[in-house]
Image 1 (cartoon, rainbow, N blue to C red):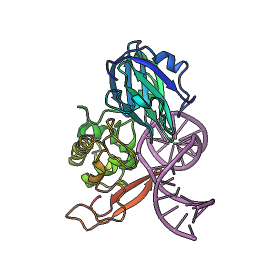
Image 2 (cartoon, helix red, strand yellow):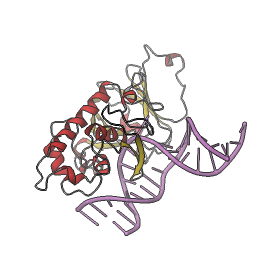
Image 3 (cartoon, rainbow, N blue to C red):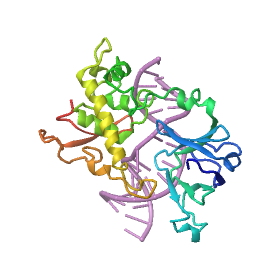
Image 4 (cartoon, rainbow, N blue to C red):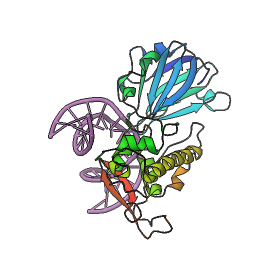
Amino acid sequence: MAGQRITEVLQRRPDLRFPFPENFAARLSGRRVTSVGRRAKYLLVDLDSDDVLIMHLGMSGSFRIEDEVTGFFHHERSKLAAHDHVVFRFENGARITYNDPRRFGFMLLERRADLPAHPLFRHIGIEPLGNELDGALIARAFRNKAAPLKAALLDQSLIAGLGNIYVCEALHRAGLSPRRAAGTIVRQDGKPTVRANALAGIIREVLQEAVEAGGSSLRDHRQTDGALGYFQHRFRVYDREGEHCPNPKCNGVVRRIVQSGRSTFFCGECQR
DNA sequence: AGTTGCACCTGGCTGC
DNA sequence: TGCAGCCAGGTGCAAC
C-alpha cells in the first residue's frame, strides 16, 4: 500500500464491529498512502489527506493481497469470497481484500492529529518491542497489582500487543504461573526483580521469534503473501493440553484453565 | 479505580 | 446425517 494511490474502494456492508465512517469509500478514493504503520494491534494507514485509516483484524480478520501482474484475478476480476467485506483497488492494479467471518475487526477514519487523544489509543500501553520494555517498566506497571499475571500481560493498557497465545508462551518460558498475582514479581518499592527483568527479555524473545516465523497459523492465518506462518510448531504450551511439559527438567503435563473467560495453557509443575 | 463478565459474530469440531 | 454444545487469535463496555 505504501506510496500507492487508492483508486477505488468497495464497501460491501454497513458495519463490521462498528459502523463504517460516513463516506468511507469516498474519503479513501483518490488518496495516496503516505505510510503504513502499527500501534498495538491497530494498523495505521496514513493518507495524503491527513486522514488515518485505522484497521483492526479482531479474531478472524485477514487481508488478501492480489497483484495484477503475478496473480490470477486479472482474469477473474470480480471473484469475491464469503465474508469479503472491503476491497481496496490501487493505481498499480493491485487489489487488497479484507475478509472477516466473525466481523470483530473494524475500520475507522480519523484525523492524524486526533490519534493520540482518541479513545482507542489514549490508554494504550507501551510497545513490547520498543525500548521501554524492561524489568523497571514491568515493576512500575505490576506493582501492587492483585490481578493474575495472565490478566496483567493481556491488559493492553500496560503492555500493548500481547495476545492470548504469546502470553501463555512467555509465562511458560519464564517459569511463572499465570495465576500468580502480578504484584508478586516486583518489590514493594517498585524496583525491578530478577523475575521481572527475565520476563521482559522473554516477552521480546517470544514476539521476535514469532515475527520471524511469520506468525502462528492456527486455522487460516497467512502472511500477506499467502505463506503460512509456522510459529505454532514452536508452541510449548498453547493448545497442548495433556501433553508433557516441554521443559526437559520437568515431569509436568500441560493443563488448560479458564481465566477471565480465556483459555490459559500452562504447566503447574515448573510454572510457579 | 480496578476487575470481572458479557457481548459482539461465524464456523469448525466433537460427541451423541 | 443432523444437531446441540463448546471452542476460537480481541476488546469495548456495563456492572460490580
